[in-house]
Each structure stands twice: as C-alpha cells, then as structure tokens.
Length: 140
Length: 56
Image (tube, helix red, strand yellow):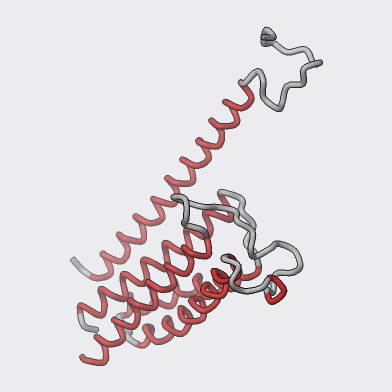
C-alpha cells in the first residue's frame, strides 16, 4: 500500500474511532438514550473501526472499499436524520414514531453543533478520506 | 517509525482521551450537584421544612 493511501486510511480509521468513542460517551457517560436513527448510524460507524483497523494493520487496500460502503450508508442515514431534525422532512415520515423521538434536541455544543450534525460531519470526513485513499490505491 | 506503532499509539491516545473526558464529566456533574444541594433556596428545600440554613 502506498504511504499516502495508508495515511489517508489511518485518518479515516481515527475519525471512525473518535466517532465511536464519542457516541459511547453520549450514551454511557452522559446517559443520552440513542434514538432509532442514531442506532442505524451506530450500526454503520462501529464496524468501521474494525474493518479499517484490520485493513490498516494488514495494509490491505481492499478494506477501503468495504469501509466506503459502510460509511456511505451511515452518511445517507445521518443526512436523513439532520433533515428530519431541521424540520425539512415531516415528522410523519420518520421511523421513530414509537419510543424516543428522532427530532428532539438533546444537546447543542458551541451553540449549533447538534448530534446529527456531528454524525454527518464525521461520516462526510470518513467518506472523503476513503475516496481519496481509493484514488491513491488506483494510481499505484 | 513502523506503521503498526503509529496505529497503536494513536489508538491508545484516543482511549486515554475518552477516559480523561469520562472522569472530567463525572467530577463536573458531581460538583454541580453539590452546588445545587448547598443552595439554601434550591428546589430541594421547601419553605415549611426545617433546614440547617438561617432563613433570609
């Protein structure tokens, strides 16, 4: 694996690791219960740590594509969640009608940074880094 | 430096940051609760109940 592709994969892995730890911090330390859409995003984020981590350790460029598929799914769910949160999508369409609401504002860091926005930023960063790593791998 | 060492070092740094944040948050919450309980006019004190604090 080329050094540049490995560095980009390392950054994507660190972003997914930080996202996973941040998500666990909100639920286990701050006791904020995750909603259904948050769980779907966690399903995409948590395995990224293992998939990208194993790929990094073994220097396997194939892990970039597997990670990209997971991150793209998480990015789509995070985008949907943010639109729902901002009121662009009617509440009737949300899958969180039972139990916890997906549109409740639980936390707002620095005045504007909500949990769905942080999730979308993290997935966007991971997708961007993995696409760049894939391009580097194709050139090699 | 070997690639595996960079990977392990950054993972340890992230986990350490998580642990520090966890303890920091817990102590902050504890301090907030202590401050709330120490307030004589807090929601925990009813006007008709005997308290250790002299009424204003």
